[in-house]
Length: 287
View 1 (cartoon, rainbow, N blue to C red):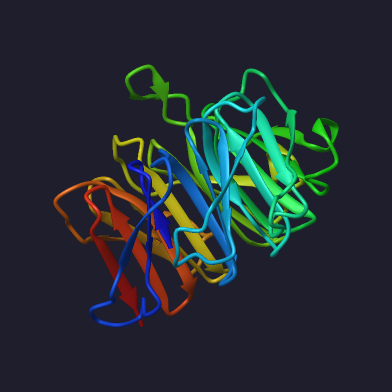
View 2: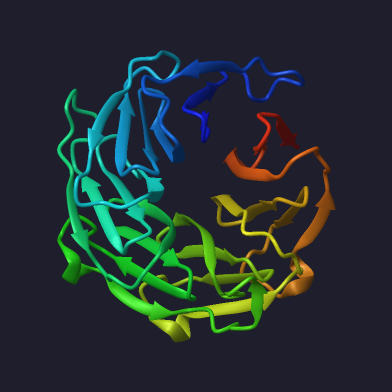
């Protein structure tokens, strides 16, 4: 499942096929989607730039439920660690959560964690461990994501403040993936990978390594297990590691090309990863 800026969901039931068949589904109102998470085949939740959350129990249909979050700004990401819990973040420092995301009419609660924060991504390994990252090298972690603003704890995990894109510094964290409570791996727009085996351990628990140099805001990472992480970005490059907490030499870059920017990557397991492009193309990698 992927979603796009033009209001379409794209689904396939055979992603491992050499030529997977994708179905393009228009969603009512054609929302400008910014993220999606599907913890099961019977729940997908997506967010958009208008501050709405969309949920469905039938991802291959047009039957999506829209929930406007009036206190939210433009959403940037969503993570659903279970079939009922979803956590979304926006570019105004807000966290929106639902403990019944699989209900016909889900209930959402929003708290402002940091009014100065522009969250770029969030990943929840379980219902009791989420980490959100932002554009100034800052992470907020929580072992009780639905417990209110006070349950989210700040740590500056990336101090690479070199200029990167315009006025944005290199430590703008744009993606994070936490496959377990003992591993989170984030990337920034300066080519760094920031990892930890103790996501709630504070700044000293995180390690930064420079693995490549690129100057695009589109950076994504997916870690299906503790022994595989795959990152992709707009220049048509894929970066992978079977030792994601290791040094620069443990990360390997492969140029996969493409006519447009890679805008997302997701690995179902350590055997299958799919990346999507801005023009609607998709590429799969398997082993």
